[in-house]
Length: 84
Image 1 (cartoon, rainbow, N blue to C red):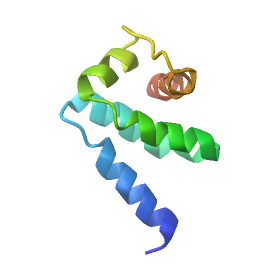
Image 2: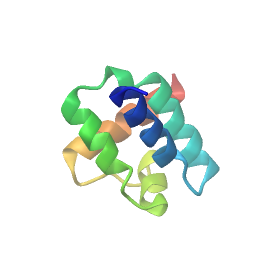
Image 3: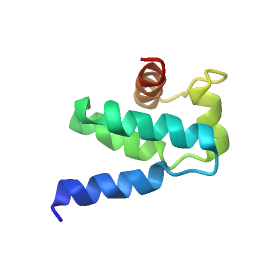
């Protein structure tokens, strides 16, 4: 298995959360939006996955906005992918 495949598999595993809604949103983004990210944005996405589910769902449902602008940009990209 190549390094990119290993990395993608690791991200797939990290996108599996305790909430079905998060699973769907994060995996849709990983399949349809992640490949279009630049290296720094990929790192930000990985950092985003370190947040607790309760915070992620608030961000992804638009009830809260991340203070970190880079994370906020990825959140918007995930939300955009979900409605596309």
